[in-house]
Image 1 (cartoon, one colour):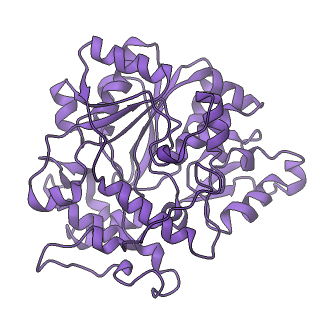
Image 2 (cartoon, one colour; image 1 turned 90 degrees about the vertical axis):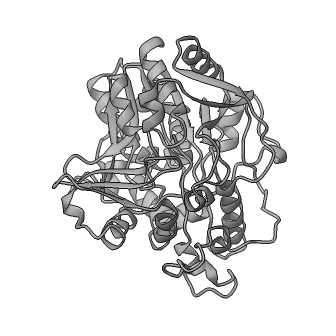
Length: 431
């Protein structure tokens, strides 16, 4: 009764991360997605057909990301309370891509893109999974399999939109079982892959042997596709069906939402405005998430500027770069190779000080930990955020005279109407 259990334990309590791991792990290949929802793709399939299989539940990071067990396997220990939000790492550096095309196309310096390119060019990786765009509806996010390092430039930016992701690797697993795979992914994607790699199944064995590099951007939260569609319609004032290209961090750092329509016209929406407008299109699982980074990737990257929201308003900020957390031997190898071959440069960095994305994440998590609904487990069993919660609206105030639409977190968490906390805003630190 595996899929029925997934429905009961994950889908009904709204704990699905839309990571797509259930689609990848299902031995029978009968799980797919309708929009953001996992579904059975065979109408006649019953609980009896699942039998004793629990693979889709076992791989799911929605309720239990499985962090402590994965940390024991990766590092031989679990994180300390001081490492609660950053996880275990060997070194953190400030870095950026050296190739000018990669650097200019990136949101935060191109660190992730440079490392993925290095994996293909120098370390024998043959396929890279990244988040790209739907070919028929280019404003929608969709997973992409890339083999040419140059093609990674087009997916070298933030994607503030949910889409089923890991299931895209099923094609590689079945049609190219000997391919060497690298992937980028946010916390839930990385957690799901680490859970799959620990499973004694055909998919688990493939993932252990063939998925050789995991890199992740820090994630404050993501948004449903409807959030992007609303920004396109209500801020750029163009129909979504006319969009042929979308970039979330286009132009001079920190970038704005860049939208090109089929008549060749480029439209722009200010980044700070889009961050606020995404408020009405969050999932409960994203908002209650306990991870800024999974801490389980080989390399993690956050935006080097600690407050890109403020930089979007003022036009002032640091030179774009990423903070690169090196965690494993595989991570150290790809960083060293990228530097050796002139694709990436880095220098030491001090982690002290505020990071807006992290602070928003901590405050939001604290709010949900004090609520009555189930929340996904955090990386430290029993740990709770002890802080005076700052409503999200106060972290992202509109410029004077440009308030825009109201967000739910203008109400204190204990007075907001039911479900209001699900309409807070969020953004992702990315490449």
